[in-house]
Image 1 (tube, rainbow, N blue to C red):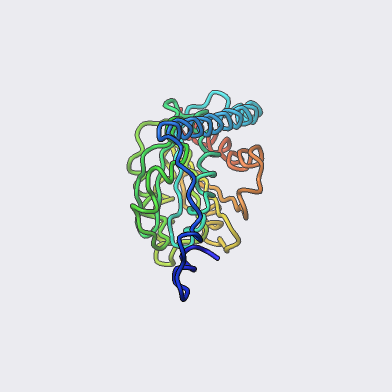
Image 2: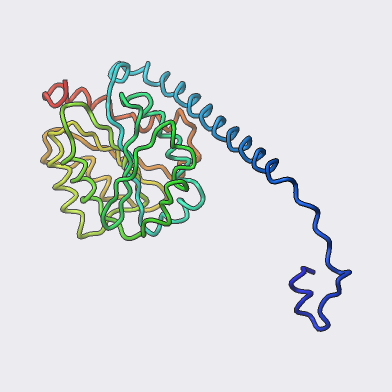
Length: 266
């Protein structure tokens, strides 16, 4: 029976029934121990990132288009209400941890641009080796931003508008469901408009929803070149790092070849 439950019983509680508290350890000792634990956790996280980067390097050696590639890496995360538990359970954070090696491999600054989207979108601070650990919590994402519906086109238009030069941009666009019906035509128009730009859109559908619209973007007509691919992953946690990287990079080399052939990139 808990202490507060005893208090509210008839007759209350006597002094003898209260278990004395153990004396607290000196404050300086507690602070010192907390710092050591935090340091070990960050060190372990960086070690895991480096191991994943080694796995990615081996995969890139198998594809000549990726061996000496310099590319921006952009991750776009669904922030609709149905994604709430994935953020709270740490699945989104772990996904970011697994994607960061792509930026460390391809981006000359070693940074991964990051957007969240619902009805509209928000660009968050870029992810890098210095700030990736507990990023979602440290940036207070769930406290700062309200979740909403699912509109793809606003963030697609923004990324396209901000594209500078001819360095390729590899966009990993993660969602757990198709966009609103009212956003389908604007999304198709945005992807068509971006098809002569050095941007490749890798759409990733997670969970067990139907992704008929995203699948249709893969084969959509009226584009300068094929600039989008769709990949469905029921549970990203069930894939090994090697399986995840091979799946994400499956169509990217073909786009690189087509983009060079059509003078979109050098």
